Image (cartoon, rainbow, N blue to C red):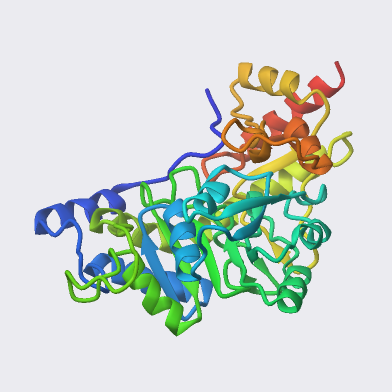
Length: 362
């Protein structure tokens, strides 16, 4: 038996919803507000994250792009972003013509270090993009203070943190724009898809245009936009998934808590939420010595332990630089994500913990 790190959890409800759309023949909509399923999904998502508006798009990357376009980020600008993230964060910035400026992270929860942000600000800085990595919420209070002082907008990359909260407030809603991913490996899915959350009416109107080639009524593009629309088929799946999400997170939380208890006396860094923080446990990530060796042995025993991310973005070929980011480089060599998804049983968790303990004692 193999225990996957993450897997989409679908049943007859999603299949029925897709078939229903197929029977109508209305697979997508180029109207300003999107198709029936898109609009219904956006309403459900707004209610879930407690945001005035949400805009559904066709990927998490598209969500980041659209958010940056709505702020007018362009060639010659700089956007501060952590290097310890998936490359999509930086690519979305680069797609505008702007330069991603890489900051270091905190070892405690792998999110961007506010002190590193301060050091990276220049006259060209036009935005900050914190990433709520693995479901852990970045230090939003400190980031808000910096952003206010420097008059900078903030785009939250909440791709991995849909459902995570701090003091009851959802990730992706601390600033003007928050972006989520609905990729199959996330806490819920639409196949491919993304969401942008905002409480700003003007940005909402702009984003509706940006996702649809800048159009309002058709053939009347007033601003730059692309086809970033979420298809009706994907929205139909997402409508079912968002209703299941609270239970998905409940099971992930239960699994994460048990795993932390079983590993509490081991010589590893266990992920620990801050006070008043509720993590969605998109990825349960530990810090461990001899990571590659242990990961290989876990995989051999059928445990889908995975390393996110073995190469920091500032070191991959496209962005390669000699920048020194010590915590980022430590994390890339030390982190290991373990399965806690809703299909993982308590028996699986005990097996994972015992296997890690045995390997540490070898």
